[in-house]
Image (cartoon, rainbow, N blue to C red; front, side):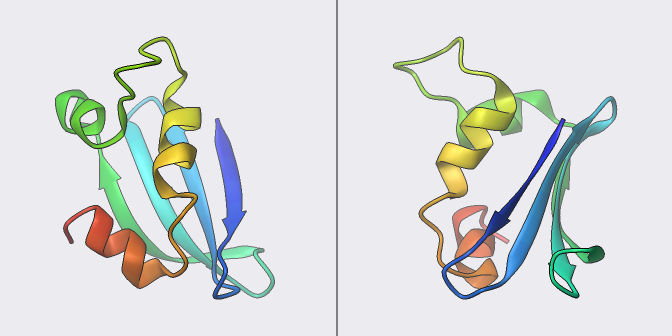
Length: 84
């Protein structure tokens, strides 16, 4: 599963969920090419701590990550939110 988000700063990120875990990548060239890994983890407890919604525990992980990051305006804000 994956999705692309265009931030208010016009930066684009790709959230990718695959068997080994989650990656958040910076996209360049109009959102076509991943150029930098912003964050990645295969640590399920860490992902739950960062993104789980106690009011909606059944929410799919991708939806929870989107909801957790959608208010970020820049990649710098995303890094701050993820404590990088």
